[in-house]
Length: 168
Image 1 (cartoon, rainbow, N blue to C red):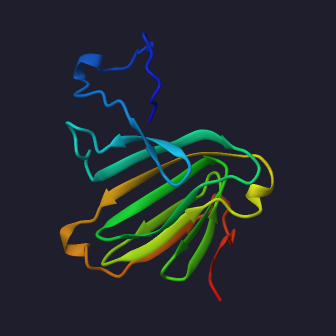
Image 2: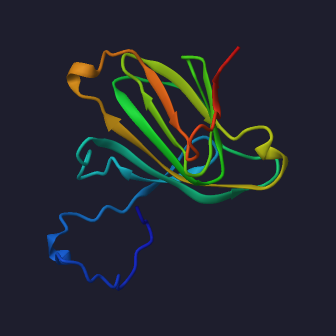
Image 3: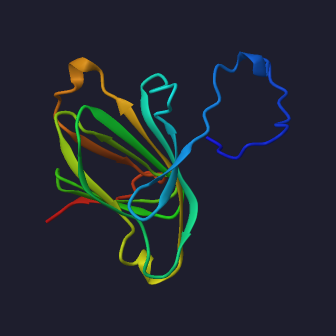
């Protein structure tokens, strides 16, 4: 997703720009001390396919001692997909999961009948200036799966990398 408007995008694809149904210019939102560009939902388009929300986080920078603080909050009946290009985020949830997501990793959280989670910049990251850049989307769960048990899956960019653990 790009939120920077350009006068001439140099388009040379197989289909013409006339085939574009709608251009969505994201609005700015806050996710706990950090602004994001939110493309969905949009006034004239509530979702695209299964995507309910679509956020671009950053690119942005934090001063020493600062970071993202998305406090614990609930989700039901949807899944989230988080992918970072730069920086890190700590995920904690009511399943007992603690996970640090890094660039190239993928976090998948299925809320099912209910999960509570938070996303924050870790204490170690806050000891120096830091950056954050990524995307996060919310995906609608099929009606027949909305009451499934919640689940969390971390897919690291490096095979065998253990960056998630359950709290002791």
